[in-house]
Image 1 (cartoon, rainbow, N blue to C red):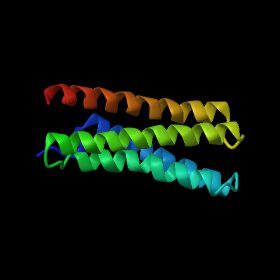
Image 2 (cartoon, rainbow, N blue to C red):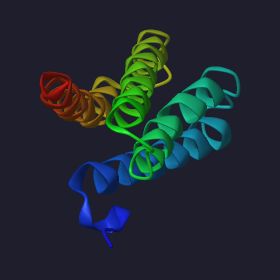
Image 3 (cartoon, rainbow, N blue to C red):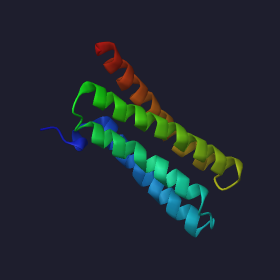
Image 4 (tube, rainbow, N blue to C red):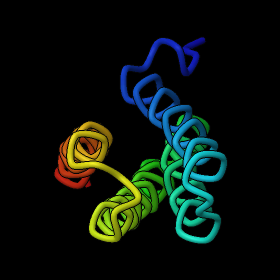
Length: 120
């Protein structure tokens, strides 16, 4: 039986969630920012949660639906990273680093969704 650790997108999304948790802790403790960082925490960890849930999908349609939710959460996460950068809570280097990971997940999700849409 496949596990999330056998799936590169599941691993990358879990690693991204851990980055979001650590960024949340940093923003709260060092920057004293509690509202925007909470939004980032929720959307950034939701990406992986939905990807992992998709691995137990009941059908291809259910699988694609979960991945579409993940993609929407990635888009929201990108928004919060941008807002945190533009409001000077993140440096350009910090924002670019986590944004690169978010964009990579978005591209992977888009590719998987498109490949499965063609099957239907």
